[in-house]
Length: 280
Image (tube, rainbow, N blue to C red; front, side):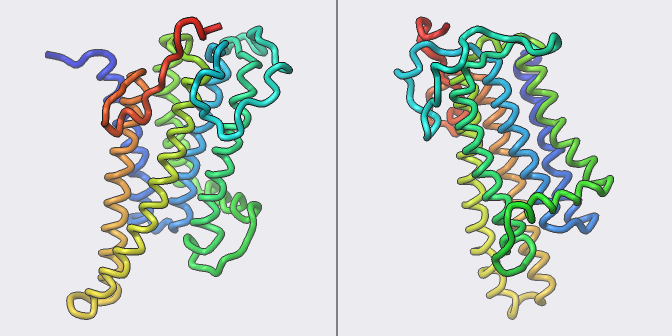
C-alpha cells in the first residue's frame, strides 16, 4: 500500500530539513568551519521558524472568545480594541491579514526573539562559542553574521531557510490550509517550538559538559589529548544531530495533526482548535 499524500508531504519535509541540518555539522568537520558559524546557522533556522508562524498567525482567523483559552503569551494580549477586526490585503499577491491578531503576534514573537538572541549570544559572543571570557553585547552578536559573506556558508544558510519555508508554504498556503487555523493555533505551535528548543539547548549544553569531563578523565589511560577531543566533538555532534532530527520529525508530524492528545512527544506540537462558536 502506497503512502497517503499527507504522509508523503511529511516525509519530503523531514528529508529536506534533515539534509539541511546535516550540512552545518558537515561543514564543521569537513570544511573547518568554526563553532560560531555552525551556531549562527542553527540560530538562523530557529528564527526562520519563529517568524514563519508569526506571519501565519497574521493570516489566520481571529478567535472571538480568546479569554476562555489557555494563555500562550506570557504578557497576554495587548491593546485589542485598537486593532481592526476587518481583514486587510496590503498587496494583491498575499492573502488578507487580520490586524486584530497583532495583539498576540507582537508579544509572543518579541519574547521568542529575546530568547533566541539571548541563547545565540550565550554560545557565541559571551564565552562558550569563542572560548573567550564573558563580555560583548548584542551588536557583537549580530556582527558575527558577516560569516554569511562566505559563499559556502551563505549557500547552507539559504538551504536551511528554504528547507523549512518551502514545505511549510506548500502545506499551508498552496492548499489553503491556513484558513483552517486561528491565530491562537498558529502561535501555540510557535511558542511550543521555541520553548522546547530552549530546553533542548540547555540539556545539550549540560550533556556536552558532562561528556567533556568523562572523556577527559579517560584519555590519560586510553588515548591522547587530541584524540579525546576529536572523540568528544564527534559524540556531542552525533547526539545533537540525532536529537535535533527527532525533534524536527515530531514538529512536522504534530503540526499536521490538530487535537492530538496522547502522551507522545509529537503531541507537544499539535495545535488545539477552538470551539466552533469562538471563530469570528
